Amino acid sequence: MKIRLICGLALGAVLALAAVAQAGATKPTVVRAGNLVLSANGGVAPKKLSARKLSPITLSASGAIATVDGSHPPAAKTITIDFDRHGTINARGLSVCHARELQSRDTRAAERACRPAIVGHGKTTVQVQFPESHPFESTGPLVLFNGGVHHGVTTMYIHAYVSVPTPTALVTTVRIRHEHRGRYGTRAVARIPRIAGGSGSVTRFAFHVHRLFRRHGRKQSYLLASCVGGHFLAHADVVFTGGPSMAATLVRPCRAGG
Image (cartoon, rainbow, N blue to C red):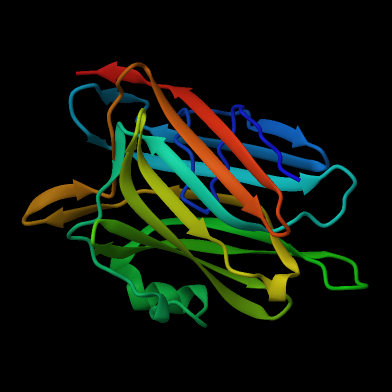
C-alpha cells in the first residue's frame, strides 16, 4: 500500500531533521491517511530574515503518529527531506562526534563524550508492543550531534535514550548533502534504527536545533537561511516498515528584511 499526501505536513524524523516551519506557529497540522493520524508543528526564529544574505536561525519541530483504532503504529524506516535552497547547513569547523562515542551510552555519558559537537536537544516517545502483549510507552531525551563533513556530505547523529523495556541508546544517522532540484537545494536522509528488535515505533518527538561556533576567529551558525519569495518550501518522503510510504509538501511564509 502506498499513501501519497500533498499537504501542509513535513514529517521530520528525525528525525531529522525536520521541516522549515513558520515561527510562532501554535496549531499543529493534523493529517489522517487510512488508519494513520499524523501531526506536525514547528518554527524558525527569527521570522524576519534578510533576502540578500544567509542569517543564523534556530529550528524547532515536533510531531506525533497514532492510529485511529488505537493499534500499534508502524515504525518509520527512512525519512528523506528536501529543503528549500534558501536554507543550508554549515558544519565546517565545528567539533565532530563519532557514532561509536554514542553507542551504548546514556544521555549524560553521550553529552560528556561529545559536548562540543552538540547542535540540539529534545525528547521523544516510543511505543513498544511485543507479540501477545499490551503496548507500552517510554519517553526519553534526544540530543543532536554534529558528525562532520566528508566528501560534501554532512552527518548528524540523533541520540535517544529510552526504556524498551531496558534502558537503551538509539542512534539515528542523518546524511545531508546539497542537491539542486528546482526550488530545493538540500537533501537529508535519516535511517531510523530498529527499536526493540522491530517491536517499537516512534510516536512523538520534539526538538530544537541551534548552534553558534567560531571558525578562523569568525562567528558561525550551524543553520542558516534567507527569505526569498516570501516563503520556505520542504518536501518529505517517509517509508514505514512493511512497505507503506507517505509524501508531503510544506509551504511556510517568511518576512524579508534588509
